[in-house]
Length: 432
Image (cartoon, rainbow, N blue to C red; front, side, top):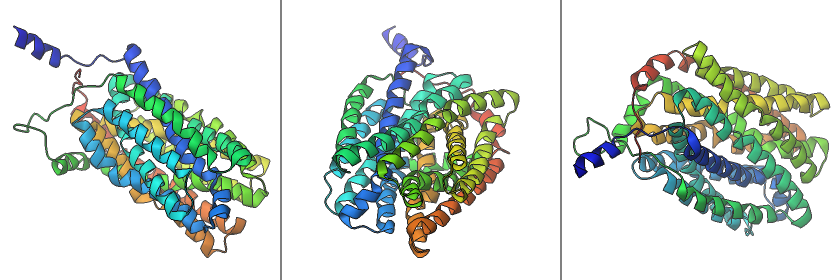
């Protein structure tokens, strides 16, 4: 009798919604905010750090690229392990690790001392997004998945805005090292709180005799889906644009407008705060469009990235006039609107056992296929064109073309999305 009761308990389906789901969403969203604060503060202190440490534009871009490499290189191996261990424990430990590395960045005295902790910031963040995305998507019913991801992805513009605004103010008043020391503290606190989130039961594959499939078989299971192959390629091209803009926009403003890092941070932060509208709007539209059209959720990144790429080119051409800054706000909304749909899609068409791996692959793809190279390539192109405002302007406009290309790649992915979703739509997610 006891064994039957145990089996029944183990096979009970995970209850979605309610306070446990909201706790997961709140903790993960707050951690995502800190994640982007720790990441984005680098852009607003980049100019004074460059002067203090005697760096080139290419070296500054490489310092950002190293962080992204840390995320990209370890994202899907860690995500694979997360799927087979514990998402909540991994999230907690990753948050503590990247916060310690953020603190160490503020102690750097030379270029190498910047590179090493920034790599470990990326390593810590590598396991967070796959685990957080899998937990949130499992905590809410499928028809509300876009909404939940919309709330989660508010963290990107909010964290980026907080990072550049607070980072710029702290840098001007206390020096460029201070923001890193200050931002590390809440990450450790939230990491501890993450241990108390409700996780779901690790899923085994029914056709695997005696255990889990090997890593490479699991990887093949995801990559054999045509939707995901085009999805990963489009995501990599899109993030070339978005990651480069996040890194270089404040510096471009400082060069073209001759303003301090504090003012550039406030303007960039204002654009980011406007972009907060994009994440929940994109999540709502993804769910709404999906109810009307079986490809609706996939159409959100198509529209968002094509529009965003065009707007970015126009913004730079205006040299940040009032109209240009207004259009930059629309660019931020468009870029943010794509992310909830992208996160939801990564969970929609894969088996339960591979949900973390799917998002880990998304992180790997978005950076290794574009985002990791973006900041460095933009810096190198800027140097090659003579640097200054004009060289950097041309390099940033180049990114707009990548956004337009990404939109068309997502359009190709939309063709097989309904068929791939039908294959897994009835799989159950069980209690831990």
